Length: 452
Image (tube, rainbow, N blue to C red; front, top):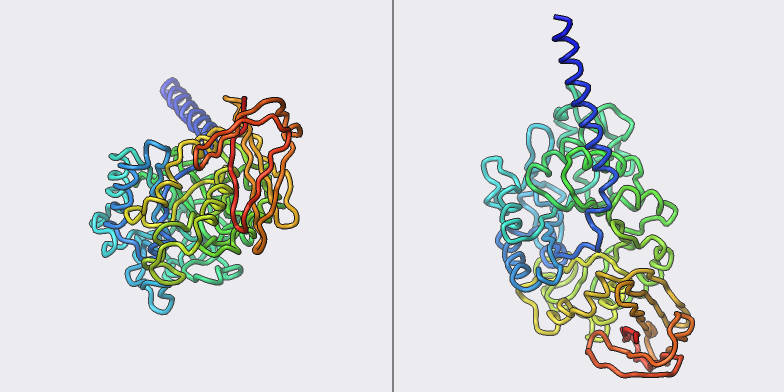
């Protein structure tokens, strides 16, 4: 009897040790899930809260056929996939019909996502993505559903604790009131986040964007989320949203998230890009494998089909402005989440997503630095540790005059005769002059590589 007892105890201790080891390993490895900046498509800019399964699949089909080979791989279903009756152009906040299970966990609307019927959730859609070699992501709001609180629904795994025991109305999201704040120190709070991440992992989710998390910065809930993802044992990329993420929390966010928004939504309005460039000045030191300051979605191509701002349109940015946006996003090594409807792409939009030289810079560069930002001019540089190339992006963010902008190559460790390649056009020339100088029109830019 004693022998049997000790044998069972030894087995139990061994199991606990293995569990703790796996959990610790998962925690230490979460940065390895995004060694290069994630690249994909997000439904928000085109479809707001109303995207359907057919539309998601159409974008996935396009990505698999045309972009996957270049590194584009995530398909992300954005906000309110669990609401039956949202309308184009905004949220139904008067009488939303929520879909959730007995534990207060949101489930996909069968009306929008027919394959989720009979309790299957997003697993069939995730399986579809995986069958094409893609990865699947979803968006959620921070917190616990108001409906779960009001109905005192039990939290799975919390030994009878109900949703009304872990919430506060303080700091409730001001622009969407589906959820309440979770009090991180309450019994059941960790179990609540554990339960939803367990559900998402069972569906096969590879990416999760969590909104209303970074401004103001919800440190307690972010830590609950990180622990919950780690507990699943599944490599789920964590994206916090929206900005501006406080620079004071930079060290914390890089230890808990794979990517975080630097600013609020970036739309097809020129003023959004100079604002982003200005805010980004504080984030250059935090660009690193596994942890990426995030510029937001790419509002190019056909957007606002049923989106939040404006009518169905091709982006309002000029071609020069589109080059500037893509040059900044890529040299900064921001995650790239395209917001336009992929099947509607024209040739120019496609060229912005498929330029192999630009994507190589985005994937392989390191040591990203701002050289200067003054008087409406911006210069950013990085280098390719494999080839020795130095990348340089020059921007005229002023509104009126064509301007000359110059960079001393000697300051970057580049001397002698060099080859200068325009990454967008592919045009090359050689020069021995130590100064790289270009004349740039308002809102335009130049992106080059410099090497022997």
